[in-house]
Image (cartoon, rainbow, N blue to C red):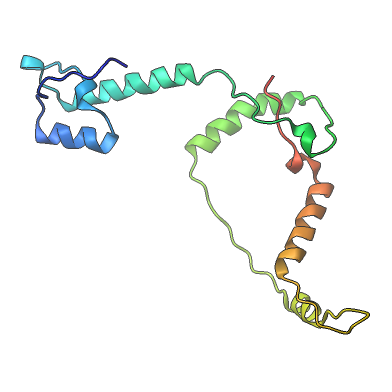
Length: 156
């Protein structure tokens, strides 16, 4: 982007509000109307240009932040052809389709009875265990049963 101009900004209150809503700096926008007056179309063009420049800069794949081998053994598998073909379509749908959250109810009365009945074998003291331990155990089992959920994609 160019450096800020120190001149007076010639724009209507409506254009100023529009620029403020989009987060555009009016000092960086060149007006196309008489005497360099900035209108909403100038702001839209500036935003489009800024976004396209950002996309060109960010078009290279992101670099891996850390080495996955720090967390355990790594198994590399080739991506099947159908997943390579489906990838761009899934990305497009992720960006364009509204997302939905689904909630289910679970009956945990048996788990609560078991959790509250836990006692130390030697001292007989009551052991306090939170439901989080059971949730973590279930997540670990699910990740072992479905290893694709516990994977990452090497973009190279």
